[in-house]
Length: 341
Image (cartoon, rainbow, N blue to C red; front, side, top):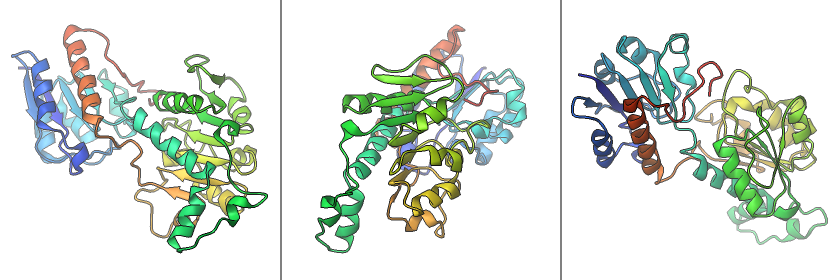
């Protein structure tokens, strides 16, 4: 009997699979298929945490697996029947070990599922610094009514229409950010490897030197690229120095993409207006990180993708891919295992 393993019970309530999701996936399978639901908690990070013993037992002989990642222990336990693995996370770095890369197993992810709430978070971070909300929050914490920073000749506030947003990585998240920025009248430039796919109102830069050309124009730099060997450390001291004075950096991609030490230096030196960060080189962010003590940094604990609509979107994607798999049709969100996304 062919088997699909569902391994999406999680300690965090918002990511713990509801019963109705199990039933919808069960309803998409023909009677001859077994749906094996793992009751033990999975690691919902998608970054390769260790699997439960129950998951290791369940995956033996499975043809398909739906979870939050696929650590190598599960791959080795699955056996030759395995054909398809789906991750409920967008990042799949923890599943791209040599055995997976060299296999014929199709790997899909949940890219796009998180785009809307993440883009909302990016917009909130842009507004936070554009309208001086960081100054207001600081004054409120000190019970201090202080208009002085807002009415100074060099007040660090600006209108959105005069703020150019530069987006590095124009995938699902980047496009969602671009649509919001364009709707609010913000000039938008974006860079990507392919010269197509830009939403209306977005100037697309590609080819040699595209990143540098984007950086020098970006009042707000938004980083949304996937984590790959090519993107790790792509925003370092040289790149930060290309940004205009008083630029803002927003990172919702992965902490490894931006050189944290170089960013702290630029923020401390006053060259950058601020940074909105949802991802970090080490997570949880250590208590001794200098980022905690910088008043021009907005820290959120890797929660930009949180939404109560997650399960509706995720279930629709999984059910559609189950139907496609059974019909022998191409799946949605197939990961290029060599490129890493």
